[in-house]
Length: 438
Image (cartoon, rainbow, N blue to C red; front, side, top):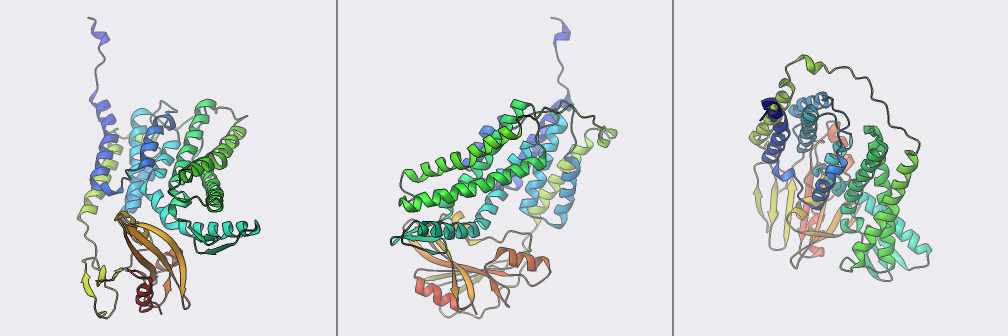
């Protein structure tokens, strides 16, 4: 057989093809808990081959500088969120340096599927739910119904309805973002376009606004027709709202916007300065940074924080962890006081921690004790029920506003402790909370 039919496999090709998988293995090894194994991830991986498209054969180094800057920034702000963004840019750089330039949608696919997106929606969605509940109550009242709204609780004809995260459709919000990327990918392939990064960001913000509108209409339907979470129509109404009020308007908007848009000519590109150096240098540098930050994070032990200055409560057992987490408990009440974190770090919100332990939140609302506001909710798990409350305290003032304590931390003011009190009975909960809130 003619030897020219044999195509030798070059070591450089094998190396460049294996580096993206190596970066994935490093991320999983160093941040296993930061990989959200859920329906959204499965859906994203399912649509990834359609969303991701190679637009140029020429190798691209466009993500090298942003990835390098994030890698340097990580030495000063070692957070999980920043590490994920750094890894995502490294991963995209390694792919484009190996197979050619991709479209811009994979960058947003990685962000939408990330733990960051889910935490942002979890932590910042409550003010949206409060406002949607108020608007829904006002609109229902104008229709002649007997309705009262307290926080995120809508009471219609004496029947309470809680606008909890499931009713807000957080899963639906992420699914809406993913399907919006699919719609954009469809028009990219159909029109041979490549949407700019700024365009895609604006489109997804618009989809987010449409999804909030869809959730508002969904809440109206669920409350007026008394459809509770265990009813089969509960999920069907959510799906209907997503399609009719979010995806269809977005589809027709993109169709109209790209109707007369022509595929751009191939731009004249200036060679990357990285081509002046041996090819393995840039990938090796970023992989080395990724490995270094992973090892550094594993070796960093939480700094010992000063515990919340509180005198021993009668009847409570106290324990203090190495990182300053104070735990007080007795037969009916459990109190966690978490030490301050920096303004750019996660604060281990009770809605995240308790949910991670298998508890379900319901009846989340803002209550006033004197002039101070606190969050209250009901926790349920396997037949057990607790009443819980939480707020932030810097020994001089209390707040429930996420932006306030982060802004004051950015300005160098005293950090805020997160105080979470849980009791079997609501009366006992309020009694214990009153000992802290002044």
